[in-house]
Image 1 (cartoon, chains in turn yellow, purple):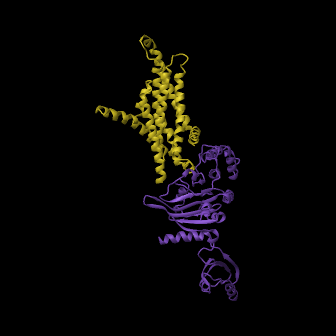
Image 2 (cartoon, rainbow over the protein chains, first blue to last red):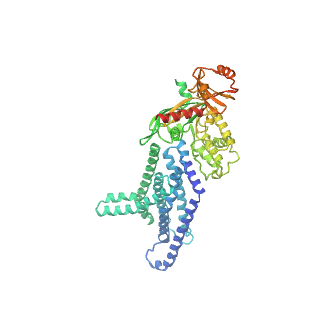
Image 3 (tube, chains in turn brown, purple):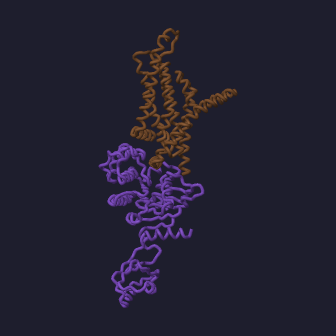
Length: 256
Length: 315
């Protein structure tokens, strides 16, 4: 049933111009960043050749490209996710799902799976760019794997948070702006709170704030490090947001 | 009585829903037997849609219990919902899908097994007159066809209960006839709850009527009983040279008389009396020029207006 709903989300996503616009913008921005970085790398190459252990093309090109992709996702995911619940409720199509023998958890997880599958496509398109160098340069596949894993986890966390915000309102635009504000707020406040707590010497509390700071969790992946604590933080944030979304929808059924 | 329990497809008891301090639905009891078509009436804002939302699991009731074919909707929502088909006031259509895609999705969501899905879609399309529109996008269909897709969605899993909220709104007269015939046909194997404002529709297709007003059930009976509701019999009398209305009303056995048109009078008999014979004799003796005498049935509209108006005056 989760797959049915996920499939439906993907189908309606591609039936709307939104998905194509997002994909185009994403490709343009990431593609530009990729070419720019590649250019820089080629100019730096003579100096790099003189270094004892120079950073490779994966470090200098793929890392920043994935960083750019993460930044674009911060804008793109709220827009993609606004449709999930808010638009369904506004168009009164939610009734179809609610009257069907499907539980709230299945609805939320199905929608989340559908959006994440779409985002996985974006990640795949992003990784294709550095992979296109495979014939001419020595790529660090371990680092690429870490980048892909990190971006996927980050995209899933963004999707879950945006999905939850989409449950709070019936206005898709409010949902998009709200989700964007929530993600940006988490990036800024999580960072600040972490630093503040660390300055007071509360290291455990400081590391816990990383759960609410998905970009901070993405950083080690950006350096090619598969940081299990960062991964756990991202998964925890995703699970928390999904649980809240299910609760919110259930509460709406009770409250009316 | 266990047999009766099994025979009823929807049984709701003491259904209450409050929004803050506002009581939208107050202690409604509703019983629907297999094969029955129930007309659900009430003025706007009476709580019909809220009740239907509760019966289909879209809204949790504040108090009361709902059983669908004996399954508690609140305890086992999945099993209960699998037996209901619901067409809300605004059909829940995805405009960007084609009719076929949409109906296949609806079939999947209602857990129609893969092997029967194609047949279920074909049957629903055929029953709702959608056979030739399968490949078209729902967004490009006219309102009437969208309404049909909504109905097809509600019957695709051949549910025991079909709940239709104003299904004929926005349809042309031919389509309305088709949909009414479809509802009658559905009433054979399924039970149907039909909410509508169109009273002749209820008289045409329903076996039983419930009228809601201010969140409460004010009337519940069969259509047949409705026609004798409350008042004594009424006749329409056409008189070419009529006496003053007061003279008519003063005749023995007549409760009230009023002029419908200059020569046509509605005469209400006192309860339990039938002074038709005396009326004809008097008319002949006094040379009133009697040219028409026709029994008038109490229409659903009379009952509806009577119940929902009188309540308003009391409250």
